Length: 117
Image (tube, rainbow, N blue to C red):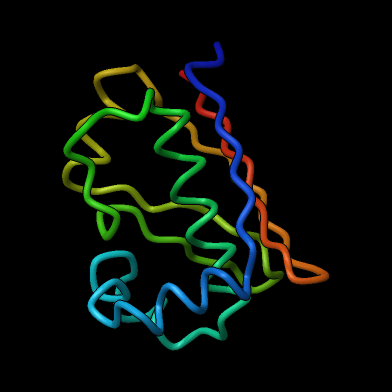
């Protein structure tokens, strides 16, 4: 396996919440239906994960945020499901394995994504 990309992002939870309040349509552009049921801090962490994924993919134009969805398993471990524009870009860079870590504490959410072949 070889590393194909690394991305990191940090989000101020309160500021992110204000942006969602100002622009309600933003929720539907950024999140899938299951993600929308989550509390604000979890949404901010998922947004950070999607931003980190975009950076790991080289931040190309044309990625759709809802083409990446963060799921958690029974233990709370996150994983990213990629489809559409995001899956196509992952194929282009040779990314087969996606590793994601997210956290939120003290008003800040963060995420790191590593792509491997």
